Length: 329
Figure (tube, rainbow, N blue to C red):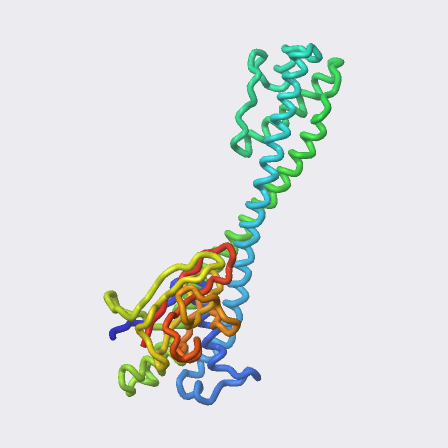
């Protein structure tokens, strides 16, 4: 079976490699593991010690900014619908008042409406919405100044309150977009640095184990965080997706109790891997959990009882689709 190094492509993968390698090199007391001292150059260890923490903080702030931007976009939807609705109701009420004789048809012009037009204006864009809120507010003031009776249910004040809420949401969206763009620029600048450090780490690992037999060397390097991928056409590589809060079967048979699985979470959802008696069996409490971007070499007997023949994955996220890659040794 032929394989090549799988360089991280996403920020999640970069963070996972740096974090995972740090946990292998440094003890809980933040001292260098004696075995790691044999593998890595001192300057590489020193660089990782500082940079892994820096990258993690930057990565987390980038993810937070992205999530906050997405959340404010979601929050804008009901506010936009509400302000569209109140504009429509105001104009409909005014048109009904004209039919009852309460208002003059000529007064439509005060709101920027053609006197012969009783249709609701286009309210698609944000600019359209703000324009018609202002038209209503200014038009109502002008009509009352000429002796007209103030509209109620809704009133111009109701429209103004809704417009203020909409403008506030737009401002928050712009602020969150600006914040995300700033974090994105910082993240982009660090990718080259992170990739160079990861290359140094993996080069030093492969050099240290260079005299081992190929199959053994790959397992040794993997144990220190190096990631490999199969060459195209290798029938021991399995990729796929799993729907939110669902189970997917990855493999039926094709492995034994001594098999080693290289599990990679290539998506954005937390995945749980396990070996079960059926392709649809629910995930057990001790299923192996893998975070986005993470890779792990796991023995088959760690994923489920001997004799079970189905390798399954459960997507613990209720919204995002999961993505995975599995290699079998």
